[in-house]
Image 1 (cartoon, helix red, strand yellow):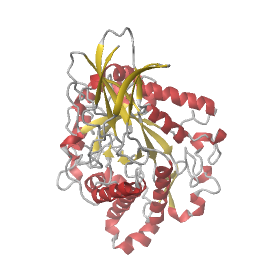
Image 2 (cartoon, rainbow, N blue to C red; image 1 turned 180 degrees about the vertical axis):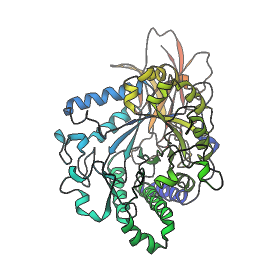
Image 3 (cartoon, rainbow, N blue to C red; image 1 turned 45 degrees about the horizontal axis):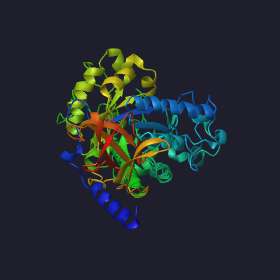
Image 4 (cartoon, rainbow, N blue to C red; image 1 turned 180 degrees about the horizontal axis):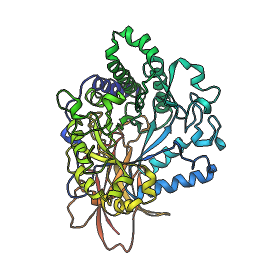
Length: 510
């Protein structure tokens, strides 16, 4: 992007960042005609913590396995991968800030063969397939099993005053401002050096509480909380504000680095139980709460416009006595605000209960829900309960574009130019030209190719007519005998997933 345009976009988005976002624009959800949604987020989480497969394989096999997985997930309609790049203050990518992850090489700090950068490889492979790559970080977690696995130059040993130990886990103390600044530094490094589509964080903020074991932040509360005017009986408010500051700072960090990169949170599925809220605004549930137990005020982040998507982990079954799936998706649907709302689905529990059809039906009929993310991706790859077959043959039978983030940018990109069909050494090829730039998110990021029969009305809102979604400015046509007439339409889509209005049309005989 030209420097002037980039500066203008950053200013506009920071203005949005500082303004409360109360309502969703009606143009956010488009192309929802018919039974197959044209716009739908279809994500899958790939976990790296405690996964033995990465350290046990040579790089050549690891590459092949990732390609196999992405091909399978793409065949099942998945259009976004959420990959855990930082499970415990470490890295599945080349970093001068944090060490290589022990879950990647077996020993923290040990470099992989050839310094193979998993994140860089996956970003390239995802984008080849028209899939998004979301870099998933656990912000406060430094050591799941204590400090014994840390390298000598780990940040824990450089700044021990930033950390506490709780239930055997080493954690950044959220009450220490330097912890927050360090996490922002890590995120900025990723966003600046890698072509990620989003930064993603899940439900691990303050740790899940253990009965009878208070969180050990007396020192930071004395040093920071009390000097900020918080009394002892308001420590919970101080903790929530610590996380609020992290989310706000991360939002600003991302905007100033690359304003088109999104920030998404996948919180625990219950915000607050109704019985815990004085005004009765919570859900009719009975379980652990983001607000009260993890000090994660997700609704505040949504209302302030700090996050671009919310992906609550609604892993329970329909009819669950403490946390009913339908109750929760309806509650989140009412609270979605400007943030996109995607539902986190537990594959194993859903398939065991035989509820995939019901869940898809419920969430597709809610006005604010715009897709799903499946936990974990391996369950799809294993076809647990036939889920891969169901997605491929029914729910994701046709491709879907990710819903546009119109709160970031709401203008259509320019149409393609010079759309032609020509014979080449590779076959009969449809090709075109388009304005593209890796530094200008308003230009074409990828293209959508539609096909319509001779007598069929051209309607690019129908997912059934999408032939391919590609980053290439060409498409190899399925030429047969040159007797059947078709109309092909090609549209452009920008980094915010805004699509050009009409596309360019070419009549072709195949």
